[in-house]
Image 1: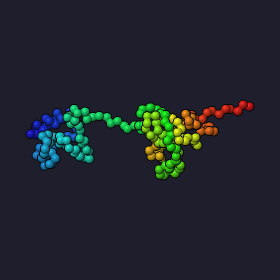
Image 2: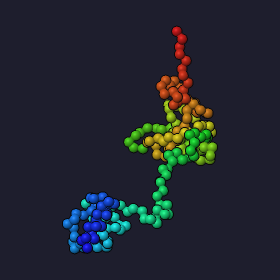
Image 3: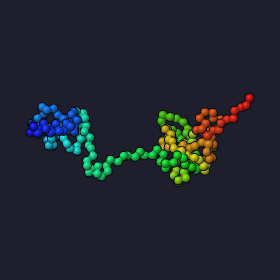
Image 4: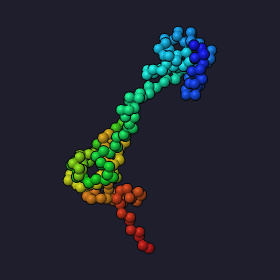
Length: 191
């Protein structure tokens, strides 16, 4: 038995890392005192049983790996991440019509009055979009351009309206970040 154990240990040391194999002083007699190791054929030589149940040895958990049947049934599929702005359907922008323009409060710890609009997209989906910038000219039935992008402190608001396009005017008298707010470049005063 011990010679079989030694030969198996030599052959398994090429497959299984050395830290999982027991020292050579480990005998067959002492192995069967552990009830976890009784069920396996290679119990005198290997530190963990070759079963599907997880085992913790020296604070190291052996994971349940996929069985051959599970692999044949295509178990290893990569999980697809859910879309951050699903109503856009892969497009970068969509046209929509405002159903309602209103204000809402952000979640804790922030406190403000945020302007949002309920918009019906050209696909028929109804979404809630944020109105960026100071002041706006939107009302019911205004035609707007919608892009993706959530607002951190407004739950359920996953879209932004694009300023300076369609019925939505840009922010007047804006000097910095004008491209984000649809503001034309001011005419320089000639001296």
